[in-house]
Image 1 (cartoon, rainbow, N blue to C red):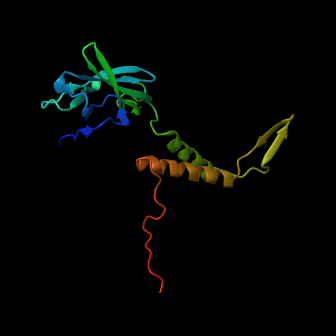
Image 2 (cartoon, rainbow, N blue to C red):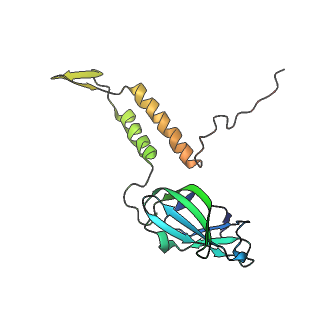
Length: 184
């Protein structure tokens, strides 16, 4: 199956994957000698050179997986500039992109913090015997245990975050499966 190349700059990328997108810059077409270069800056720096399309009316951005496989996960600033030799440089893009770590080089538990917290809180709620006291004080130091109600509230919060992560960043619809009918 062929990969579909997107138009415009991405907002999420993964280190070690192929990066591909097309960008039309009508005021600075490659057919007139303009070149397009992107600069990725954040926890590391990386430069991405675009090439002219066969028709010369847009730029093609293509990278190999090895070129950026070692990028550190995090948010980066992506700047795009067109240049005409050494005489002109014009900004054409300034945005943010989140680069995920290379999945082939990750060690340990790669789940999100929220997913790990769901496991921790579920284990705490399932196996917890309630202490005799909710608070203790020993030599002036106070220890307060989280109540079951507090743990359940936190568990619900983290479950919603995990559901949103699995739904492309959007919280699950609470109206899913609900049907409305006209009152008679």
